[in-house]
Length: 282
Figure 1 (cartoon, rainbow, N blue to C red):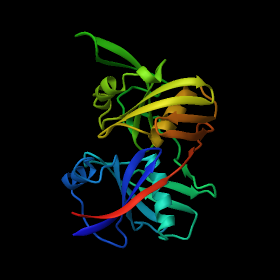
Figure 2: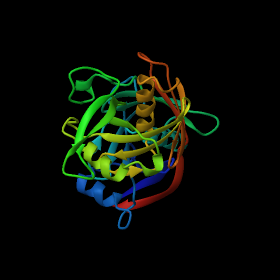
Figure 3: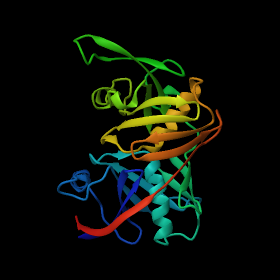
């Protein structure tokens, strides 16, 4: 069958968005993986599915599938594209919507300047809820990984935060030379992260501005990661290194992240861009 889709991106983190309200199909993991191929398919980091709400207090259900076909809990850049998509396609007349994800409810608001503000909810720091294997909550943890230069193990200091999906955040002195492609896969599948993890490498320029690269589980390094930006700012604040409002520079562009501390939601503001529309046979 043919399904209609829209290709979108949030700072270069790109998505195939499919409306499963006006059309109906079931995409198997192997089909998602085939569609994500940048040579033989549509090409994307994640597939976003728009579904009818499963409860009366929300407007839509939001599902996310990585390029490897696995379903994941959350995607911040995708959330902005989701909001832009349902508004531009007149699936709602609201500028502020509540969306159901597999990990809870998020609120999205389209602003007059074309950007989207996402209320990502409060960060999850309790290890068993991330999930992460540790005895208690801490601002940073020690992880042992195989050395990149020898047969020995080496120590890595990282923060562990969930923004609806798990993140491991490391500090780096130089974002350009950070070992994203080598250390990223080692930490993604680290035994202390039972569900695997997204790995962020953050260089702090000053208390209100950072550079970030993210190795996303099931995808690899992407141009941008919204939940990764949120997790990085939370991690920096927990270490006493960042202010409440921080601009995060990713390879694809900048996001504004605000967190007022424990008990507060993380707020993310950034663009969402339509690339093209099409149809594909599945």
